[in-house]
Image 1 (cartoon, rainbow, N blue to C red):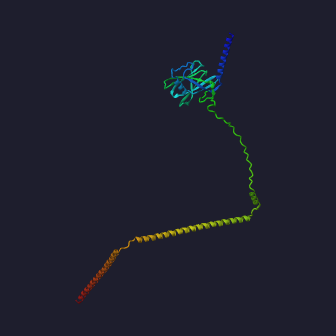
Image 2 (cartoon, rainbow, N blue to C red; image 1 turned 90 degrees about the horizontal axis):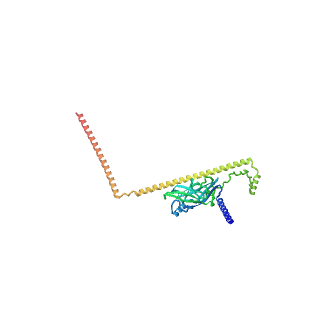
Image 3 (cartoon, rainbow, N blue to C red; image 1 turned 45 degrees about the vertical axis):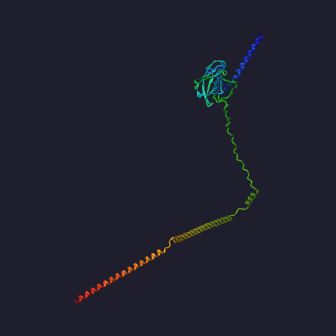
Length: 346
């Protein structure tokens, strides 16, 4: 009897220890955590579907393609909030979520809010946030699938033992996101650098080769020229400049003379070429004039004879005309004289 009581006491202690260990494992400090999820088309407690479908394989495949594999769990001041990602939103028209009050407990409707969205499998994935008092229970989304024309209900479990700090693709509403998915760049201190002293570096002595230094010493050793020497040097410089200018003028005059001679030579060449051209033209004209044939020469001679005969005949005619006039005048004078003599006798 005593052994039996002892066994009962030991069993109760073991159960208390196990339960205490589980609660300690799930206990977290305030913060945001990424938690892996599990899913099931059938109710894990009853092993039956809640929407009446019997095609479990199809349901499991559809859930796997629309559920994000991690959830965001936020804890602060004793409250826990869960955010899950549900895809295929282009085919969903209504979303409801139920949460279980502990493992094996009853389900109640949760108040959900959309905190953001992302892209998954070529479709939109909406992020839904809700409060959950006990994360050991299941989450049961109920989605109305338009192509199927009915609700589809499934179950999600949180693997709190694999939780890691961070927010991932989700937005935390209570706690700033941890730098896990998108690490923040380390901010360098903005302290202004200390100003360097503005001391001017000392100039290094530029030591020239020994040859130059010796030349400089020689130059320094030579006395400065007097004013007379300077004036003589100036006059020499002016004379040199004048001679250079005269040379330049001579060169210019020579160049001009050569240019004039070239132009005259060119003009003479042009005149010679023109004379040659005129001679060539004359020769061409002479060669082009046709030689008079003997028939044409005879005709021209006959025409000349006829012209001379006409002239001589005209001259003879004029002589006869003059002789006739003279004879008539003389006859008239004789008649007048006779008439006058007869009157005198009467």
